[in-house]
Amino acid sequence: MNGYRGAVDRSLETHVSQAVDVWLAWLPRWEPATHRGRVAPCRRCFGSPILSAAGLGADVPHGVQHGLSIRIKTIVDHAVADYTARNLPMLQTELDQQAARNRSRSYRPAEGLAPEFEGLPLDPDPDPDSPFLFTLAGLAEEADAGVPALPPLTEEAKAALRQEVGLADDYANMIGREVCAILLHHRLRIQSAISEYVEPQITAMLEELSRTLDAPFDPRDPLA
Image (cartoon, rainbow, N blue to C red; front, top):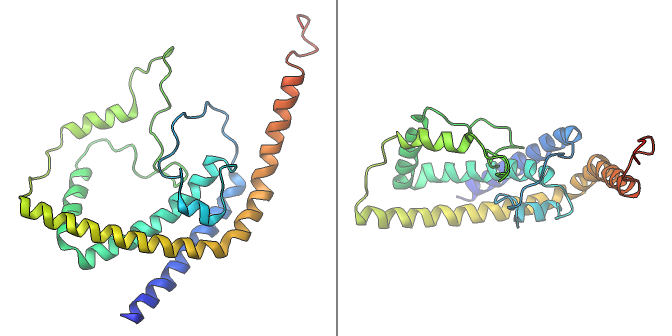
């Protein structure tokens, strides 16, 4: 058992290091968003202990945070999936049935996205002055409505399933804590990359905004 735990720990260290490497390679391509920001906070990132461990505070743009948090969360998800497949047969059966149901849907717009976009809302926030003719989420719900529901469970099966879900949650929390501890060792290179690639762009945006506020009209405009 100790040998297995040691293998898991080494695997986690490798996967977290690789995820940070990939995120650092993507970071130079990041650019500040110019569209209207969302009102609701991201459920994946808001208050995330992963981001705290990585040293990505609230002053770091969400797009930068999201790309790393999703990559790290995927590592946790894969570890929990492996644990579930080996130890929790009832939960694994339920997950297999749900996966088969999902594959039968004719429209799955949220699948196959890059980590920078995974988990984000499919559609922009609604604009009362410009109502949507349709939304991607709405089309996905229409496709989902035609898929048969999963078979019902007995009360005994529900109780057993809840117990296995609790075990999976406990394991996920344990893996999450270990991943956060590993991330602490990558803080310096994460913060160095933020200083090199992100902060200059934010500074440039603030300077441009300041110039715009100081001179709201183009001096070359005859109406100014």
